[in-house]
Amino acid sequence: MSNNFIKTSVLTGTLLLISLAMFAQAPFTGTKGFRKFSLGINVGALRPSIITGGSNDFTKPQYDLGYGANLRYQFTHRLGAQLDFVGGKLKGNNDKNYWNGLPATDRPISSFETKMGYSFALSGVYTFGTINWLHSTTKVVPYVTGGGGVVEYKPTTTDRATGTSTAFDNGKALHSFFVPIGIGLKFNLSEMINLDLGYRANIVDNDNFDGTYWHADVHRDKYSYGFLGVDFAFGKKGQKQLLFDNPASKLNDILQSQITHVQTEVDSLKLGITDTDGDGVADIFDKEPNTPAGCPVDAHGVSRDTDGDGVPDCKDKQLITPTECQPVDADGVGKCPDPECCKNMVMADSDKCHMLNFPSISFKGNRRALTSDAKAMLATVAAQLKNNAACSIIITGYPAASKASQALCNNRAQAIKSYLTEKEGISSDRIETNCEVGGGDVNTVDIKSK
Image (cartoon, rainbow, N blue to C red; front, side, top):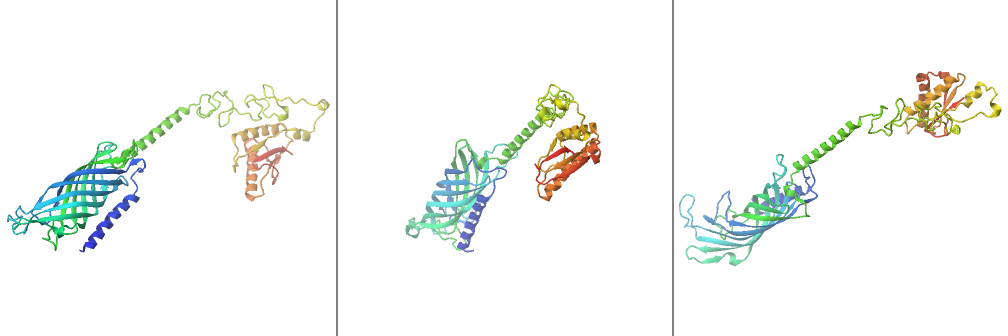
């Protein structure tokens, strides 16, 4: 497998992971209002080997001091990206025997020391354990990392025979691509501070990191970095870190809040079912909670006053009082004295019919059904017709020019006629319907004597 292929694969995988993190949606809740940026510093041990083993140019890798820093951005609860810097030096020798017990004296180089000027790596970070169904808060979050980077280094080797130290490649600073793979734990100490315990295994894309080419045909040098660090999360005061947010707990709080709200509303509706005055309208909706018994009311629980004379229908002895005869007395009877000239005149039946005062019925929108108020008015129309057997009426609507409007007018007029004939017992031959285009308000139907 070529070096270029390895580099391309690792970089492509890292960028893909970061891209997925940028576009992935956080589970259950959004990511606004959280701390996402953090800066970390760390110190630990560098060693020219990794825990998974593998071949090494020196039989005894040694520990030495390392230090580092990182800049991290958390895209979602699970995915983030991190830029790492690590510096320090690595050492190893051949003082330890081979795995089969034989001494490593056949190797011409007895030891090495590599000074690492820097190593920069960009990695994708996957965290888990943030979605916790058992506990409302998350204090410890495991994570894994993987990416690619560049390391600068200067190896020096010591010759076994002479004991002299020689700088590799005349002390020139070397550069190589490497692949960091890591695991770790984040411990949340406060809104701003975390403890970071981690381990990185780094595979260098070369066999000269330790200044030798002992296995150059099959071997790539490796080194590890185990560290303890402190992270500082940036954000506004009071904001929590997205890394430690538990969306499952937040979802539970939201659902519980909604359940409590619905329960409160249900309880208030239960209280509102009470109907103190027994008018059929619950107290919670009743605008007249003390309506006298037996008085018909409208949808708001207010006593009906069909003719608008200020006397409710249940007390009105003249249910339909003409406007010109108002104001009325306490019994709802208007004051319309007969002219002196007409007191002794005998009025023909046709004249009596024209003296009758019939209401207009109003409709809303495209409705054609009769409201309770309209039915009350039609009851008074029926009463007048029953008291004047020789009288007939014409029901007139005023549709627009469209067929739909004319059809609606016919339906409304027919609904009024049907109510008078079927519910009030008025003979259908005493009722005529008519729709006149443009003659008046399209939502008003007039009732007039013929």
